[in-house]
Amino acid sequence: MSSRFIKYIFPVFMAGIIVAGCEKDEDIGGTAVEKLAGEWWVQLSVDGDLISQSFFSVMTYNTADNASNKMWIDDHEDIWPFKFKCDVDAANQTFSVTGATSEYSNITINVQNGKVLTGVSKGPVSQAVTDSIYFEAEFSDDPGVTYQIHGYRRTRFAEDDH
Image (cartoon, rainbow, N blue to C red; front, side, top):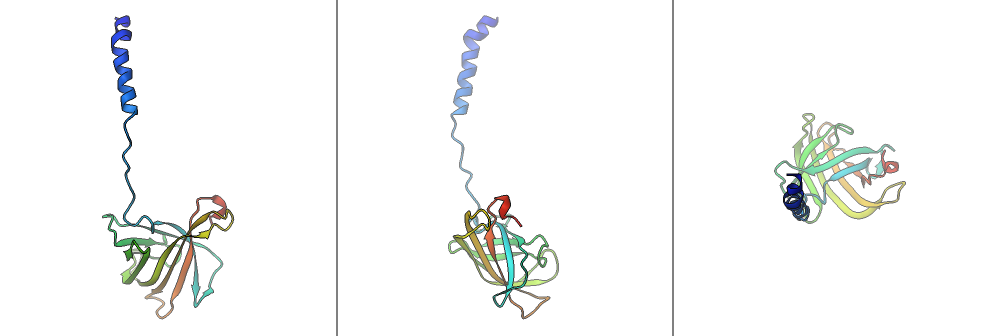
């Protein structure tokens, strides 16, 4: 029986493995806002003056329905705290919102002049080319003050993390 296995069944078994190994992997693609989505190291300024030397972590990511005209901006309660959906123009890599309510609190946020610029920034230590982010935010619990939030996409080099 074992010589029969080797002679007939084993070659069929191996042919199946070879054919299965040659199947093409499907390209799963990206999200509708993938050029805007990412992890960011940002700082805050008011009227162009840096208000802290600290960097804060902010994430931008797609909505559950993968809408091409919406994304989340989330500071994981590191800055204000804020987590809100904003309107997106994915083709121009811009975003804004008026009167969005934070998922972390009852404050509202207005964002204007939001923009992701591809390949115009560098990691501070690695000097790896990366994207930059900029947006102006006004929070309902600090009315009349417009914060400029600006920074760079996380490079994934440990020396560039804060």
